[in-house]
Image 1 (tube, rainbow, N blue to C red):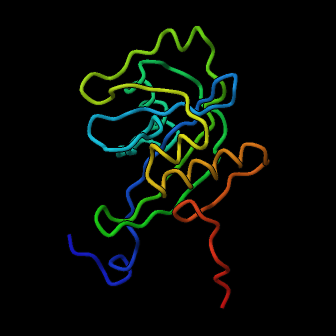
Image 2 (cartoon, rainbow, N blue to C red; image 1 turned 45 degrees about the vertical axis):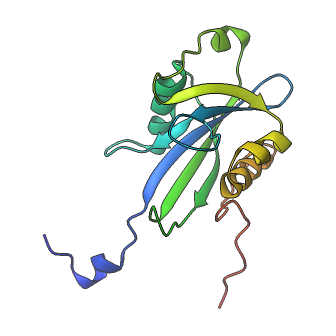
Length: 161
C-alpha cells in the first residue's frame, strides 16, 4: 500500500515503556541486561495493540517475574536515534517495592543477569548518559503533579518562532 504525501511525512516512532521502582532508602531498581553493555530500568518496546502502561506491566512481569500495579506516568521522552530510529519513551512510577514482592523476583533467563538498587551517582556510572538523564528527570517529576516532557532527558529549548 503506497503512502500518500501527507502520510509519508508523518513520524512513525518506536514506543517503549518502563517502570521506576524504589527501595526504602529511595534508591532506584535497575537491571543488568545480557544484551546491553549498560544497566537499564525494567521495561521494553510496546507491542502492536498494547498501551504503554500495558507494555510496562508486561515487561516487568517478564523481566522480574512480578506482577505489580504501576502508578502514574512520570515522563514521556522524545528520543530520536540515527541508528535505531525515533522513539517515544514512557516512564511510570512503580513506587516502593515491599520485601515480600522483592522476595518473589525471578529474573528472566537469558535476558537479565541481575538487579540492584542504585543511588543517583551509581545510575550515572552504570548507564548511558541519555538514559541517566531520562531517569533523573523522571525521579524529579515524582514530586510534581504532572508528567514531564524531556527530549533525550533534557528540558526542551524554547521552540517558539
